[in-house]
Length: 226
Image (cartoon, rainbow, N blue to C red; front, side, top):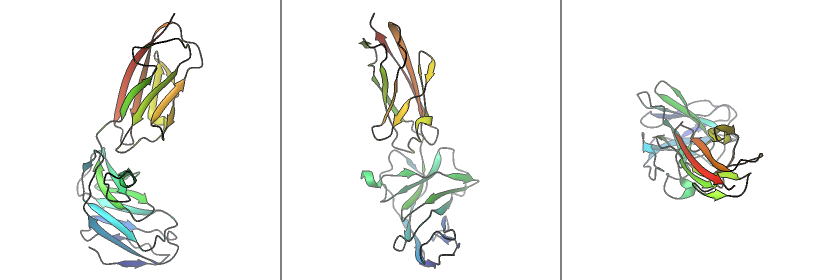
């Protein structure tokens, strides 16, 4: 473990882990008051289906003195794949939903990954190669409905890097693009038709992309009664 470093409010001195792989940079003005900063190695668990690339490191920050983000940098020693990023956990990434691994917007320069955190967390480098889980919900695949303006609904969930927002989806009905709405809390993507569809068979195509560009595409068809 590293020794405790005390930084002042105007300090910009990097603090490194004992093995020098992870460093923390506290920008000037990011601290409310002088604070101790320490990095300790920690075993990580419960990887949400993610592949572990590095060990875990807990960043300890006195009594939560932050008023702005601080930067963490991790030197892997070799260039990471495009599916690799920094992740953080409030715990150690175990199965408790509060402590699961969450994506950090990551910048890669050569062998170094960098990103921002805003509190005492556990940080690790993980890889996500699993596409989002996507399942058609409505209209039911192969089903027949009476409504000429149905609501198109699919369940979408990603337990790894996560989904950014509505711009992470493309949806079409009979090859005509539509702009669907993403409900993060309910894990759904939906669109209500504004114009009547004709009787017969109609096909929906939906693609979902996570933050590391893993993509899943599904199609389903339904019928409108004559």
